[in-house]
Amino acid sequence: MKILHIPTGGLFSDGIGTFIYSYLEYMNLNEIEVTILATNKPLLEDKIKFKALGVQVVEIERKKSSILAYMKNFLKLLKTEKYDIVHVHGSSALMSVELSIAKIMGVPVRIAHSHNTTCNHILLDRILRPFFNTLYTQSWACGVKAGEWLFKNKQFKVIHNARDVEKYRFNPNDRQIFREMYSLKENMLALGHVGRFNIQKNHLFLLNLMDELKSKNKNVKLFLVGEGEKLADIKNDVKERKLEDSIVFLNRYSDMQSFVSAMDIMLLPSLYEGLPLVAIEWQINGVQSFLSTTISDECVFTDSIQQLPIDNVNAWVKAIEDFSYINRIEKSIQNIDLTQKSNYDIRIEAKKLENMYIKLVEE
Image 1 (cartoon, rainbow, N blue to C red):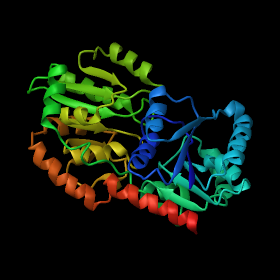
Image 2: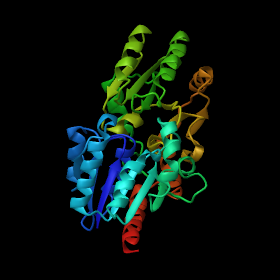
Image 3: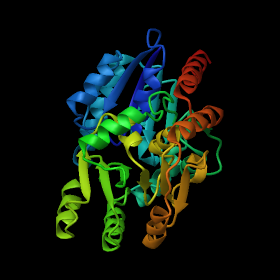
Image 4: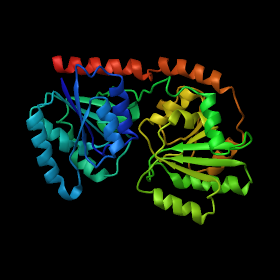
């Protein structure tokens, strides 16, 4: 069985790229030949980690200025490789580009997988919707809201953004090592955020929050994990606001278990989300987390998450001021049980997905 995964926004180590990697990591790839089509120029380390799984990464850049060249090269790939399944990941009807060519080339299983609740090209998405709905054979989504956004009143299947419960379990030793490395005393409240530096993740809100906390002389430090097109702008803004001593940029940080274990509070003030992977990781870890009310509450299955409005920074300030320490070891154990009951354990969900692929090809 040959499967081609296409993250239409490009192959990165966050979001969709992480979703794909997480599932492949726990599938039996001896029976499945998997290829990733990177529509960007991915980082070498991202290609290496997929190669370690036995997964090939093919690069065909998908630029607006050269979309015809992209389509031609994509068609050539499908003609050569004869895939059984083309699994397209995105958030809009712009997935029609890949799905239409896959249909023309006779790929029997064509999956449209929605990962968000809106998109950046609303008008083009609206124009393409009728055409898009004729192209896929399977409609999947990371959550109900993401499915309703892309497929409206049509049926779709939810594929949970599952995570490894052991990997994200709270670890007190990791917490101590990280906090010593960054000279965090016990009375220093560590705030964390994980997300690509783009408009969606709403980093400016975090800076406004830190301005308020600094004006109140709160003993807090914010750690930002991620890269992206807005990183330089945010760094400049931090300097202008004189927040350099209060905010740490960790850029691309690979040891997320240690990072989340070290934090006291995680923050996600996104303008919109499908179903954020990080919210699953944070709940497994048992860390207190504040998410914007614009994020679907589908991702909430424990009491470790509190949702707050992003039009009121003072609500977030008060929530941080009201923070109290808990037994994170016990909370993490409780939350792992709830994670498994809520179908977010990757070891279980990956096997389900593997069986679904097999069944689709056999049909």
